[in-house]
Image 1 (cartoon, rainbow, N blue to C red):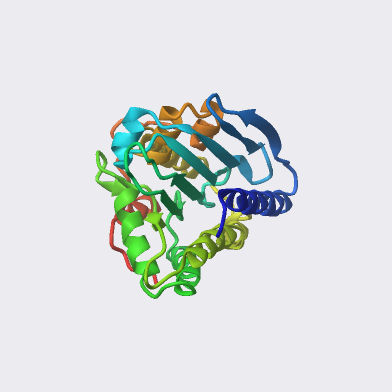
Image 2 (spheres, rainbow, N blue to C red; image 1 turned 90 degrees about the vertical axis):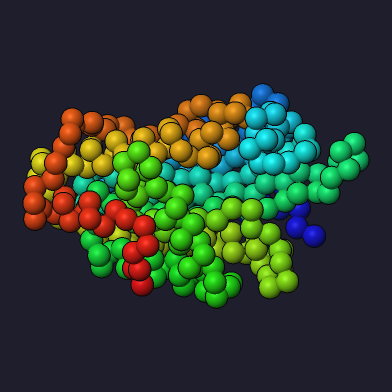
Amino acid sequence: MITHEQIAADYQQIQDEICAALEAADGQAKFEQELWERDGGGGGRTRVIQDGNIFEKGGVNFSAVHGQLPHTVKKALNVEQDDFFATGVSIVIHPNHPLVPIIHMNIRYFEMPSSFHNNTPPVRWFGGGIDLTPHYVFEDDASFFHQQLKDTCDKFHADFYQRFKAWADDYFYIKHRSETRGIGGIFYDRLTATDEITWEQVFEFSKAVGRTFAPTYLELVNRNRDKTFTDEQQLWQYQRRSRYAEFNLVYDAGTKFGLETNGRIESILMSLPPTAKWVYDFKAQPGSEEEKTMGLLKKGINWV
């Protein structure tokens, strides 16, 4: 039987691996670590990298928290139990280069013990995913990114990629803008054992998603980091970052869960970019790379 202590320990190892890979790729900046404790139970390791050769701001955070769920969260999750345990690794990287994409990854585990008082069985599931937010969408890069995710998914279940890709398209959608946050990726929640996949395989899938992050993202970084760019392209980068901020503050379930369970504010909001701009009623020039990118921020694009 896999314990939540083992899950948390393996997630910490993945955090260590990813931080080492990102530091090596940047070549200058190092992660600063802050250990924190949560009022109510548990804590985590916040690691932030800033002002590097390529990474302007990024976080690779681990948490393992427990305690009692607020009523609002119980209602949102549709559960009856009070006690919970949650652990995970959450990553957001904002590069300083407009031709290098923003990336987000999250792997997480959630459980609630059985409750004699409420006559409810134990609850446990995994969630997570990886999604990419390019400032400029390069179709070859998008195809590579999605192929890497498909390869990981296919090792565990033939339907995972298509299911989780569609889920990401729907989840990372900015309704008030009628556009996707980026080119999607995979997203899944409440994944548990079935007749087709064991609990151990679900856990291995979660770790495989985590270990897909570094080689996939660093390939995209290295493809684009040495390209020259203009002031106008950097302004566009700051405008696209504003969309990222809007999504995280308005729609993101992880942000809401962290705030409502009294999580550490700095860790929760580390996903926000260091600089963003909201240009009033911006219109991309016809035929421009910016217009092309806007035309590819749609659901249902088959990248592989």
